[in-house]
Image (cartoon, rainbow, N blue to C red; front, side):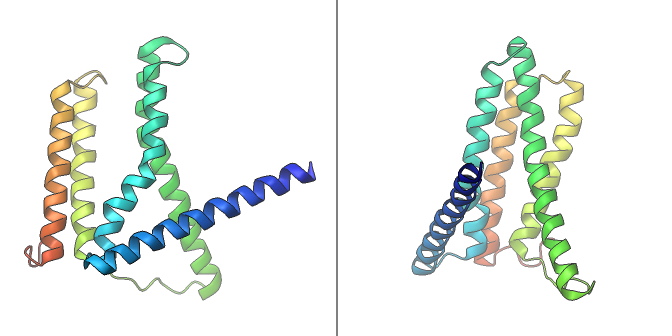
Amino acid sequence: TALVACGFVMSIVWMDLLASEVVALIEASGMVLGVSTNLLGLTLVAWGNSAGDLIANTTVAKGGEGGPTQGAKMALAACFGSPLLMNLIGTGGGLAAHMAVSGGAPVDASISQNCRVAYFFLALALASHVIVFPLSGYAPPKRYAVYLFGIYAAFMLCLVMAEAGALGNFLM
């Protein structure tokens, strides 16, 4: 039992080490190319972080217990549940650690233009989901996927424009 526990802890340590090195490599490449860490975090790092979810959700959607309909429902639940859980745990854990260290002092932070653009498009996509999924009986048409890719393309364009300073005080 102790050997299994040590193996589990060491696998976490190695994954943390590798993840830190990959992020440092991406950050160094961004510095060399003159790309901000905000833009890298909202694109390249986010894509890498989502790759595991993409593979898992695709696998769940293609089969599983209960046939394709049940698999699609499970994949839809996983698309929202997994990121939500990670965000709640990450945010809650970080805020709890801050509260423990600072004795309950408020968090002094500012939100960058890129994050404001990301929040705007996230709210747009979530509002679209809230409307489209119930209206389509939780089986959205294929054109809805095209719409979502269009939102993502607009998001990427706005990120690049925000990085170049072309958005001015958009969402400020």
